[in-house]
Amino acid sequence: MKIDRRDFLRFAGFGCVVFASGLGGMGNLTNRAWAAEDDFFFVQLSDTHWGFTGPAVNPDSTGTLRKAVETVNSLKIQPDFIMFTGDLTHVTDDDKDRRTRLAGFRDIIKELKVKNIRFMPGEHDAGLDEGQAFKEFFGETHYAFDHKGIHFMALDNVSDPGSSIGQTQLEWLSADLKPRDKGSPIVVFTHRPLFDLYPDWDWYTRDGAKAIELLMPYSNVTVFYGHIHQEHHDNTGHIAHHSAKGLMFPLPTPGSVPVKNPIPWDANQPYKGLGFRSVEAKGKEARYAISEFNVKGEKL
Image (cartoon, rainbow, N blue to C red; front, top):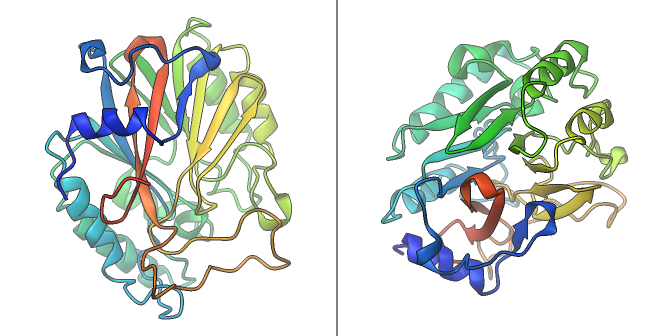
C-alpha cells in the first residue's frame, strides 16, 4: 500500500487522533495550503523487541519489523526523521546475545530509506548493563536536537535499574531548558511514561514528577513514549503524553487483568494491536496531528 503526504493529512481529518499543544484549534490542518517550510512529519516506531520468540504471541516474530520497514519505505514522501522509542531488542542476561540482537536490529533498519534515524533504549536494551551495549551501537541514551523550529529531547528513564532518570540527567534537562523561551515548542521522547500510569506494572518513572516539574513552566510541551505497547493519551496539566503501539506484541490496558502478559496472537486478525504512527508537526505553532497505522500501513 502506497501512502503519501495527502493520505496522512486526509487521515488527520477523518478518524485519527488529533492533538494541539495548549488545546488550541487545529485550523486548516487537513488542507495542504497550510504547509510551510517549517511543517514536516516524523514517524515513531517502538518496542520492536528483536530477539523475542513465542509463536502463541507472534508467529511472525522475525518478520514483523521487516514488514514495518517495508511499509515506511513505501511512503511516497519520506518523513523528515524516524524515532525508535526503545525496547529495540528483547531482554537477555547474556552480554554477547544482547550485542547480537542489537546488531540484528541495526542490520534490518539499515534498509530504511530515511537515514535520519534517532534511537533511545528501553529497559530490555539497557536495564541490565546501564546502557553500555546500546551506546556502542547507537550512541548516547539522552540527547537533544532541533528541527524546523521544534526542540526535541530524548530522556533515558531505563538505564537506571531503579526506573529513574537520575539527578545527573535531571540537571542536564534543567540546563538544556534554561535558555528556551517559555513558549518554545518542545517535544520529549521517553521510553517509560513520565507520570504514574500504573506503577504496579512498572508503567511509571520513579522521579518522573521531577522532570515534569522542570517542563511545566513551558507552555508547549508534548511527550511521546513507548513501553506499554498500546495507544494511550493523557495529560499532566497542559503537557500531553502519547504512548505508541509496539511492533512485536500488544499488552493489556492498565489494570485490566491481574497479571501483565502479552496478548495472544489472533489468527483471525493477524498483527492486531501492532503498528506505528506518523506525527504531522505544524512547525513553530506546536500543533501536531497523530495518525495511527498497522504494520501493513493501513490507517486505524
